[in-house]
Image (cartoon, rainbow, N blue to C red; front, top):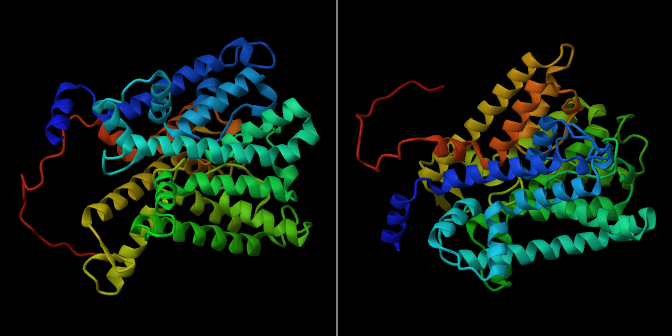
Length: 454
């Protein structure tokens, strides 16, 4: 098997990482062409291509940032294109391609399995196709349940046809952590702040989609008789801490804010607090006005956005596992341990280094984009807006303080590229662009020396 993989890599010009990065770019460009057609806009006119590229990038990268209002600007053709782009981006184009192969009865080749392995972020090729089948069945099942729950609220409000369409669209958007909505006028779901069914359904779909397919497959296979792996336990515990811990702090920060939660009932405050904790990881829906939140609430949102969801999920950010590995590395060092230890397990150095690289690259990208926006955009906009927008784009969240619609042409390009980098991954892009392969371990060993730290 190893010889076959090596031979395949020598035979093909592009590596799996390069094909993955290029594949996303092709899907984005195709979506932009479809959205630029006159049939896609309500006015019947061609939408400026920069807005089509921006919207397509946001959909494929499951972000939710938009320069034109999704609910009022696009026709049902345009909205359907966006929904399909969201599904493709959330599942990954190789997973969608595998679905097509299943229908056509085509065999999945080794080359395609290697690309799928990179896209699914798994360590082994064994059982990969079976896992993809689980992912597809699980995705459509969860989205179907979500659509049914939404329909109990949307059909009475919009009628049967429109209600069903809205239910399916928002189920796909929420599960894929995309944040696109059809409510119009950039309101998101603020009108449903006190609607338990809508708010909790969206929050549940976001959390399920952001947990990671690998974790759900493992939960399904364990069936209560097999202990979950260290990875799954870390993901589940961290997700619960971030959701409920974030909700508690959000409640404390916003409960007396007259512009967000002060006038709400206790039920509304609890729902909005939970939703404001779940959505930044990394969905982009909001039930309270974001630009009216307290500085503490906005800063907490930025932190949650940067962390994001879990590896192998529909979410973005540096990922929960990355954050935990770095945090526990600090804890282990403070305790005088030589290795990073989690749940009485030792984490290998390569994982720690990779976590550090991903976090640093993410920070560098966010800082760079924030600085560029502060130069290219109009004067008088608070610095907080630029940092918020840059973090939201990198983590493919879709939340904004109102800056997206005011972006200049250069600003739109910068944010679109940031969304692409956030979805594909900065490390993946760097590896895709690298001309030279990594040197084999141990080929070069430089002499050791010391520097002062701290």
